[in-house]
Image (cartoon, rainbow, N blue to C red; front, top):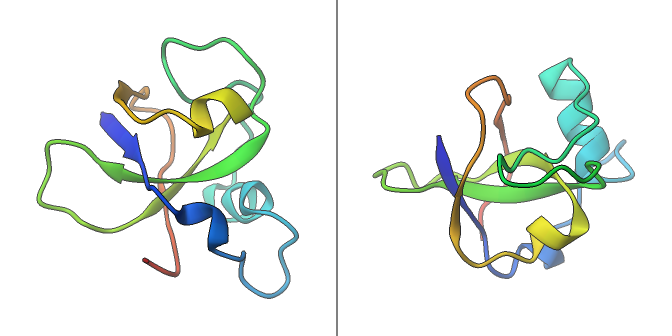
Length: 92
């Protein structure tokens, strides 16, 4: 699956009851990934990031775990099929 980060998503606040988007992702994905979701990165996952599916008509936002460096990417990148993309409760 190819994804791209959502520009401006840093202003989005996690839903009530969650301290971070990573916590929200862990709760809804019901799994834990220690590593960043980007296939070309081997750093630890540090944040939950808003992404959109690339090359798709789907305009919804999803949360995935990324390292802080990959959260700042502005390119299209690949994530493995086993990464659960949790639908975000809000879009910009």
